[in-house]
Length: 204
DNA sequence: GCATGATCATTT
DNA sequence: AAATGATCATGC
Image 1 (cartoon, chains in turn yellow, cyan, orange):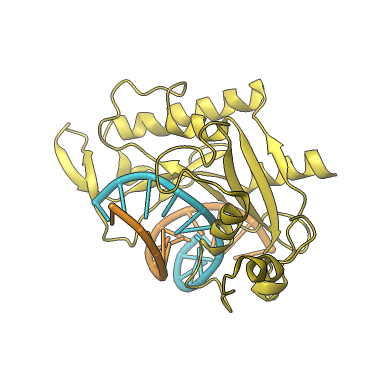
Image 2 (cartoon, protein in one colour; image 1 turned 180 degrees about the vertical axis):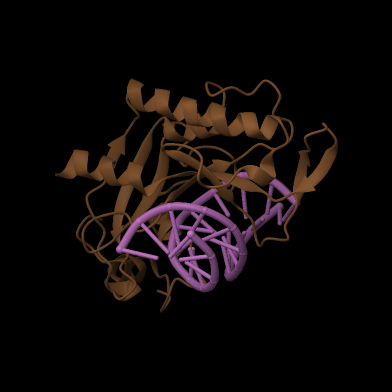
């Protein structure tokens, strides 16, 4: 796929290319999934379960810097007792990622955006250690029922931000008193600073 | 609502 | 301009 445009790939697959991604935010990722035959569907598994590979498109700007952070997985706000970094879903997904850089300048028509050279990556021991520190810091706040204070400011490479249909969406959680409450769903995201240096390191 | 795929749009 | 918080689509 490298070197092809999204429009060319979509045409070959018989898929209509949207004029804008405003109402098709996941379109690029789904297009690449179909081309590569990802089969995990909407199950909480890596895109290629047998290979344990997670597929992620990475939107790239003119300067070849990622234009967006990368969603990794939902933050477990309930039923999270006993979950450690080692056993977390976020670690399982980041264990092996096939990154597909794709041009994403908003000025560039979706159909004309070129697919870049893929990168099959796994975190180094040092990176894993930073993720673990972030994970522990962020999950500690969840454990103490401090979801409201859990802003995107925390975390070196991993951060927590809303992951919901809108700000009114609710999911079960626990407050600071250990009482059940309904609260905003949150997700783990990789900061741009991380994917930025990842690209610099591997493509420079 | 939840899990998938993310980007949009407002605030800093 | 970059980062944070909010949002969009789809299939159960």
